[in-house]
Image 1 (cartoon, rainbow, N blue to C red):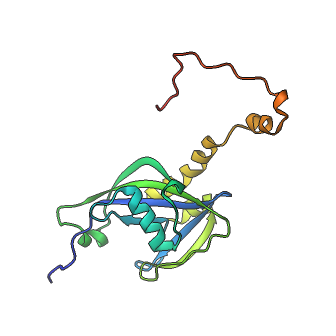
Image 2: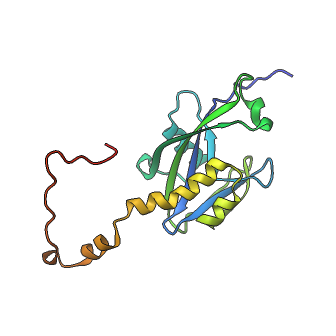
Image 3: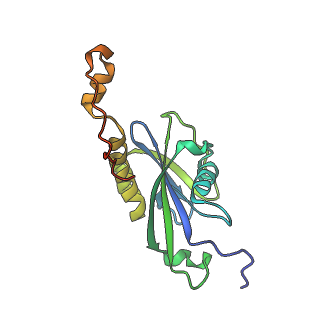
Amino acid sequence: MTRTLPFKQPVSILVVVHTLTLRILLLERVSPPGFWQSVTGSLEAGETPAQAALREVAEETGIVVAPGQLDDWHRSNRFEIRPEWRHRYDPAVTHNVEHVFSLQVADDQAVRLAADEHRAMLWLPLDQAAEKVFSWTNRDAILQLGARLSDQRPPPDCEHQSRADPSDIAAEPEPSSNFRQSGQ
């Protein structure tokens, strides 16, 4: 049998779509049935991971978002491609690199499935979603989402101060000139 389609690139994206209350969108693959996942997909020629993430979210869910709404985790996973999917890649390819993103949507976000890829969808609490997905990279991303969002929220003391009268809040001293934030 002659292959007429080009091989897929062994570079993909994973987008964990979630609500503010950490309900996670999961999609059940058409083939094989019972394989639940977040939005995934391979990069197309000339596409960046962020462009692929936006395209795949739109194709698989009907959700169209601006690039600034997508949270790029600047993290990737390398994993072995499942044997049943290797025929999609060059015969010398055995591993894939997956770039991780997340996307927060409204609680009442409508979803339109791509019928050729997915047969069903669910919105599940974070822990239940992590248990249901078949991929270890997807499970890890879902579990890490809660921690990522907690790190981005102000601590309870700051939330209390932000609701107080500004005259009740003491000014914070300016950082010294050799102050440096970690990660920069």
